[in-house]
Amino acid sequence: MTADYKKYSLKQLENFLYDAMGAAEATPQEIYDVIMGVVEDNYYTYKKQASDAYELLALLNGNGEENISDAISRGNKVHQAIDDCMPPWGHSDMEALKYTDEEMDAMSAAAEEEEYLISRGYFKEDGFWKKPKTSWIVKIEMDGLTGDAYIPVPDDLSDIVGWDVDDELEWWDNKDGSYILRKVAK
Image: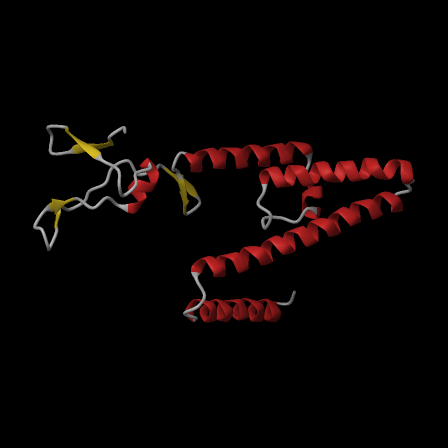
């Protein structure tokens, strides 16, 4: 792909996204579904082509019918290793052939570690893993209609702790100007 064509393609993608996002009828979910559909379609298309290439390579390397299934089996193991440790849009299946078993194991271990960190709320910023936020400072707000005071719960906090709008919370005064909020078990 030449640099000019790459630039043209990316500009077209940008224009299409502006168009789709500006259309009142296109929802964010619909835009997401279209993008994911294209990515998945390309992934499975190239995965099939890679599988056919494995079979052809087996034949070209002098392997008869009795050895083709072995070559395909090896290819499927590489496919599985890729599927286990890489997102479909990360690398092509053929690219994985340049990695040793040790490198594939290391990539799988790294992917598992990343998955673990993400499940614990860690996030990547500027290439480094950042510890999840464990405290928030919010201002007390007043309801304009009732005059009641309330504390808005930030979305990232409710996502991390699994609180919903209808949940009942209890206060724990730490006697130092801070409080702990806990969900009341139902």
